[in-house]
Amino acid sequence: MLNFKTLTTGLALAATLVVAAEARDLRLAPAAPPAHPANGVMYTNFAKYLPEESDGRLTGTIIGPEVVSLGQMKDALQSQIAEVGNLLPLYFPADFPNMALTGELSLMGTNSQATAAAVTEYMVFCEECQKEMRDFGIVFLGSGASDLYEILSTKPVKTAEDLQGLRLRSGGAPWGRFAEHFGAVPAQMSVFDQFEAVSQGVIDGTMASIADLISFRMVEVIDYVTYVPMGMYQSTSNFATSTMTWDDLSPEDRAAMVRAANRANTDFTHRWAATMPAEAEEAAKEAGIEFVEPDPSLVEAIQEFIATEPVTAAELASSNFGIEDGEERIAQFLELVDKWTAVAEEVDNDPVAMAERIQAEVWDKVDYATYGTAM
Image 1 (tube, rainbow, N blue to C red):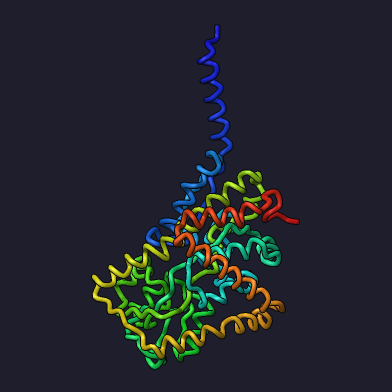
Image 2: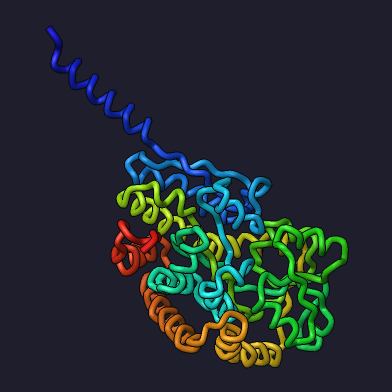
């Protein structure tokens, strides 16, 4: 006679095996080395959260930047080498002009958690942005942001005159405009190439997060850090998901992916914007790097230049991509920045609290039966 306990144990085991057989292991491409928060926190935590949020139905395997780099991300997602990847629209402005519009305002950022949340809400409910991504073959699952950018250089920068002729790596058009405005020479290159370029004297420094001192070993080649208001890297699609993968998932699993991504996005921003800069400063001091106090006239000149960026961004959107309502879109985005700045200040930029608010005010309003799918 069959024992009841044996029967129930057998059924439970069978159910477990069915779930395991149906589990989907996703190929995840952070396009950054383990020391960078995009890999060591953002994608590492995402891989941890996936099975938690999906009751084990979804897992992830991280593939390194030697397999898929930032510049290769478009092709990797379209070819399914990566199913989820760290896509930076400023690398591909012609393909993502609507999302790149938020990136054109990068110099204006002041609060990392607020800016990341504003980009997320803007992108989720922007019909043109959603169509643009669907046409390209990806689904947007949220953004993150860096800390405030600085000038990391081999020559001291204290005044506007010190910027004249300085060759600086630029991570996108806004910093290129900044450099040209002050007479510096912007060098558009991958963040992975800046170490070699500085060490060989090809460039004099970089406009970047101070975290790059430890993320990309820049502490070995930089001599000066100048803190000036230069915005932040904010136009990101941290977990750009191939539509081929997305379309294969149930609405429940899509929602689980979003919850995991949302948690990892605020973890990432906290790491990049809060804890890592402090560690980088300590590393800089130990290496003998000098921190330069900028002249007030330089700070004032930079702030005056940044104040013109909304008009510039609208003009570029129109002339380069035919976006004629750029002013209205920019105004909408800046309103979202103000909204989320108030939230971030209310919760003291706590990443868990920010994730909860973004989940409630953005992602819980999404219909996962239709989000990211052909309409």
